[in-house]
Image 1: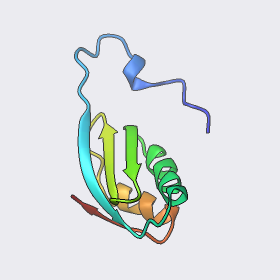
Image 2 (image 1 turned 30 degrees about the horizontal axis):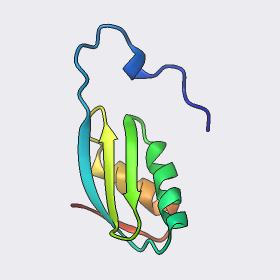
Image 3 (image 1 turned 180 degrees about the vertical axis):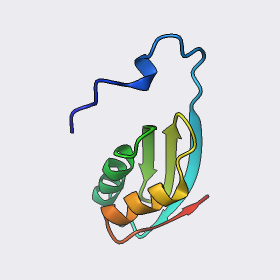
Length: 88
């Protein structure tokens, strides 16, 4: 979908950039198509600034302004399909 115009990263006076990276393991992905579904759903979570999903290893890295609640991640992954996510 279209990017929202009010991107917190564009806000003036926020000081230094702090990006959190959190590792997750996603089980059940069988192809790149699965990974793109998961990526889309995760990107829709508020606060997420970047997502990297590798379906072969099942590794997912979420970049965010602050830690994303695991419930939100689990919900997004479930929304994407029949996958299971755990914090790596």
